[in-house]
Image 1 (spheres, rainbow, N blue to C red):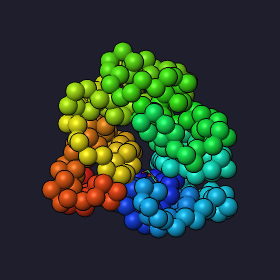
Image 2: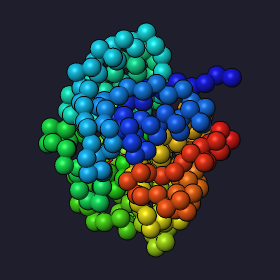
Image 3: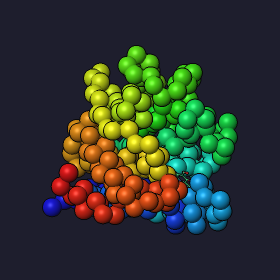
Length: 274
Ligand code: PXL
């Protein structure tokens, strides 16, 4: 059996189930080799009251340079902490795409939520991210990020169908990437909209009242895993929605605080056959 290999560029948060801890778990359980590139080390994610943070921007170039002999089926990036990091990721993608044009580039442009960019997102980073997304084959923004990347006014999350459709088309035109727009609210449902080769497909899940940290990281990690396993994009999106729904069911009954993230451990094994 051939196991696909993906470089996962993200931070390592020791506590709170997000970024690399999620990506490595999800990808491995699904049958994909996850090779981490840590962009920063945190004792906990930034949703907690206290955390230790060590930026690893300086080690990114030498770390990635040492991988020049390796081949990757995919490059998957998430949370990036500085403009220099975004530039380094762009260089890494450039190198590997030239070496192997079949390498799939999955970018989760983690920039903000609920209409606002994260406080860490400087104007320089915004500029760099708008450029980096042009290297993607697949982009998985939420509505806030998609609006920002297309200079569109944010009008909340209830934007189906008209505004959501315009948004994915605009982002795809700007980037040439396939788009998965996440978190569109429609009554008691959440829609994830896939725009690929001119086609729109919707994947529907029940809207949960609790919003757990790291849910977006699980989503894009599952999508990344199943794309690399050869599934069509909308199928990978369906699987991600189903997996998160099952995991959240377990989380809700265990009364886990929202900051501790989705309790996916009891259902991780299901990914192998999803
Ligand atoms: O889940 C996104 C994420 C990733 N990395 C860090 C974070 C967060 C969200 O809060 O704090 C460090």
